Length: 339
Image (cartoon, rainbow, N blue to C red; front, side, top):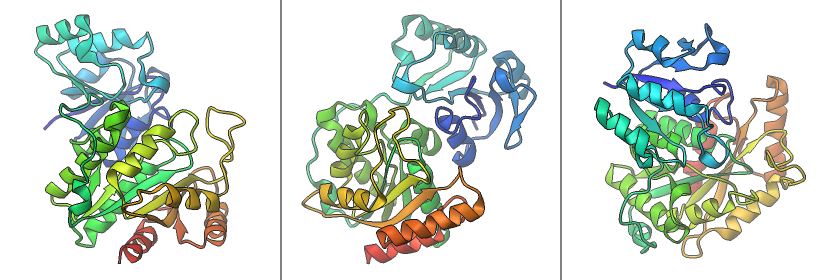
């Protein structure tokens, strides 16, 4: 079995830009032996030691270095080049979820070939993508898509929590990965934000078909972007129309009023977001919002419970924080909406 060294230099404690490493640590099945972050040397995360260099991690016998950060624009900071060289020269495979493909870098590709290691670019789109055909509309499968008020607020996490709860109840459920972190966790999927826009909906359709082929009768599709995001709305709409969900779960970071990184770009009230998503769903399969999943990590427990009650009062829908307070209530609402 592979043993991971997560490369999270400067970002291991960041829930936004360090989300890939943190997601794999929380939900992945491959053992993680170390996290690299020179700003936190000597600390640990979930019992995993944090080291300063690749050399420091080698005594723990990793086999693969996973790029654990998600930078804005998906590009490597210049200082990372030496870090990647060090991992490759140490005989580690490198798994990369950024938009810069390591396999296309002549120097790093030659170095990898010389050391007999693989460079795995998780965001590289598969061959043969095309526009959707409507195949997924004919499948005997129920599809749930997480959507959100912003990026990096927990759409993947909510999908994983609901899938795990559904499996524990004996349902034939599958998590459908649509981004680099989900792919690193599940071992399959398509990073839809790297797909040519004309084929984005077709990629969504392919993911639903594959999820069904993998035994899923209930699919929890990881959402991407946000319909109201000034930079990343396109990927959301393509995913909505391509996956053609039966229901949505609306995700929101409790207390957030503006799009992160875009001051002056407000987040509308939850009731407006519910109406917006239901209105833009595919006309051939109208979807409704079944529940609101709040991320209450910025609030104390009593504040979190108050925020959940407020969301329910505003939208008239069940609401909860499926990580902090368990996913059962959100899943109950989803299953009720699918009946």
